[in-house]
Length: 133
Image 1: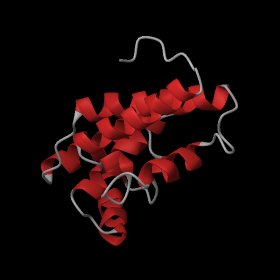
Image 2: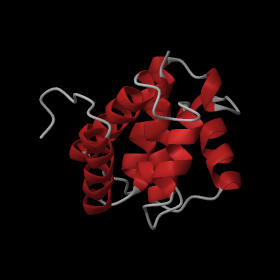
Image 3: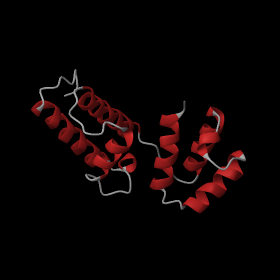
């Protein structure tokens, strides 16, 4: 239900280099829960606010690029161009192109490169990508 928000939590954890142990302790301190999957929407926002307090700065432009990457991957999957059209496969593919632990926390330039790679793949397969330029 709150998947994009949970991804923001993980991106924030990675961006500020917070260990899993410290992350679990922070979750418990802020929400009283051990896992982000148990959090309500308000608790997720409380955790994100805590990350902001700790120095994390969300990047809305990166969020748009990530949504574009997800859309292009979905289009490739719809046209049967992917052996495994899952989220996990998309993440594994994307992580090969970035220098961070996960593509969700990659710098804007690397995400833009990923978009271009996927757009070119769609072009080679003659797949319409709508208004994405």
